[in-house]
Image 1 (cartoon, rainbow, N blue to C red):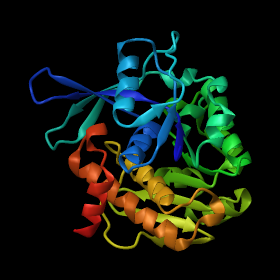
Image 2: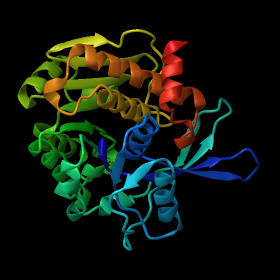
Image 3: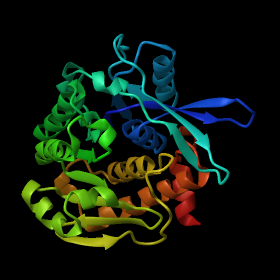
Image 4: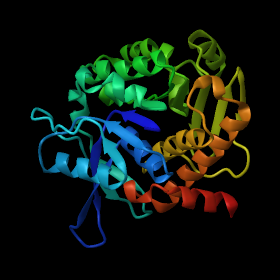
Amino acid sequence: MDLYSIGELLIDFTPGSEPASYIRNPGGAPANAAITAARSGLEVGVCFSVGDDDFGRFLVQTVKDNGVRVINPELCKKAVTTLAFVTLAPDGNRSFTFARKPGADMFLEESAVKEEDIKDSAIIHAGSCSLSASPAAEATAKALRLGHENGKLVSFDVNYRNVMWNDGQAACTAKVREILPYVDLLKVSDEEVDMMGGEAALPGLMEEFRIAVVVETLGGAGARCFFGGRSWDIPGRKVPCVDTNGAGDAFWGAFLSSLRIQGVDRAEQLTKEIVSRAMEYGNAAGGLTVQKKGAIPALPTREEIEAFLAS
């Protein structure tokens, strides 16, 4: 595989065009990133756990329909499929009306992560929503550790949403720091940078954990990259790229896709030029997703991203 992704899945109930018509849209950071990468032409596998119910089966089928291989196809009897209910505001933006329930991804077992799958992959990616106090925390850590030990490029999408943590921000930060020694690429938002001590703390963080790249998505202003102790803005066009409607996930899936398309499969190969191209490619994907205002249907293809960059 080009990309192995592990983490959460959820379903959005998005109002359709007719009254009382609802469209089920699977989402979640690792799923959206995986599907974006698959639409960019990569061979992608995702490891997750969903309930053995209508919603769970719908999630599995939708991921497969979008070109992603499901690595652990067993449905979990004890899991409750993650749900989020949303409405559309008059301006077209989605608004959550019901917080997501404790998710099926919380039941992902460490045994689902196989070393042979890690060895078969070029890039290992995980989302930190699975790092709450659950078996999924150990499964996520195992995937990243095995990726690191096997010399793979390891990507981690930090998420500090308190709803996914049992013991508050301190426990969240401690858990993230436990897995950082395995990570090459770290994706954070503005808010998460503040929680990690602000931009001034990032050079020390990179030196301490040998993190090659720290990427930050900026609401409505593109993205910045911290690399080799320095930082720079994405070259070229800046478009909105925020963690709304899957845009942040699309950004990162496209970013990883660009690295793979450029032949990168380990941290030692990263250069400023390679990362700059990946940032621009990812930022275009995030901007396209914002413009379309949707979930999986809004995630762009490689052709759409390249056409956007060429326009």
